[in-house]
Length: 363
Image (cartoon, rainbow, N blue to C red; front, side):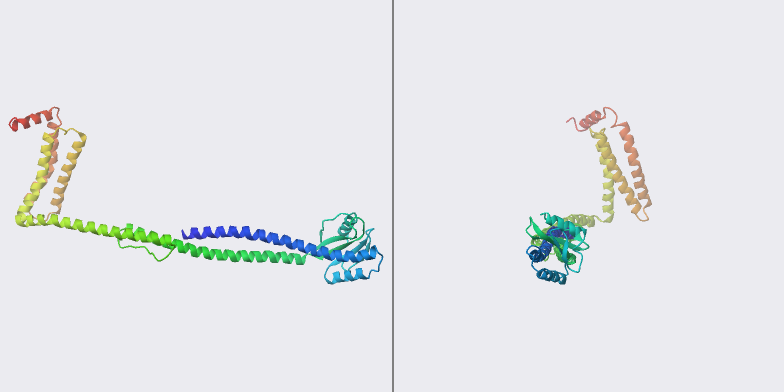
């Protein structure tokens, strides 16, 4: 039970952590990408504003070249194109030039907002120099994607670390909770099993576990105490009854003496077959199979008891034991012959009843 509780809580916490951490990390990653793109486009617009003064107003290119130099120092690559898509100026880095850059320039000069691609690990951004519908040129800026990748990796790393820490805390809490709930129940189960096996003094621990489990243990202890008192009371009553029954028999045995007591004992054995013959001969239900089986069981019990007493008897009194053995062997034979010739014959019950009336004086 403890293991099931721990596994259930751990799995539930894991699912909740995944549902909470993964969407948060995805949202933060998307926000970081947007912020990085916005920063790149802002730097591109700064260079485009300086290029517009040179391309549209025909001012000196000093400001434009200063912005290009600042972009180069920041690690970016930039290139300025005129309205004919010809390269006007650029940073020493050529990542902002090439086929992809030229395609971006053509789309910008055509009044469209292109989707910025990635070129050799760098993100490209293009902005018009001047009006969007009739630009006087275009600026392409290529920025390394490594900082963005590092930020995304950091986001996912921190999310994984937080999730792992939460999962570890959940596992520890689940194990403690499972032990807190499961251990008292296991102890109570063991106490109930030992009580059922006969350990009447067994009691459950009521000091640990939730309040519900402690109340259950207290109820079990109350039941166990009452059961113990009831069993001890029954044992005392049975012992008293047994003593009361043994006392008259012992007194009678002492008064009769050993020989007379044994005589009474053997006469009791002999009374069983006589009573059986009397019931067979005068009963009206002797031919019933159930009654015949009952007679056979009674006779087998008495004969078996006689043979058991003869087998357990010590040496001596051979004549008496021989007579008892012959009687025990002859009783079943005589009873079977009597049944076959008398009570099992048709009309026997009627004749037995008539004989009983005549012997009783016609009453």
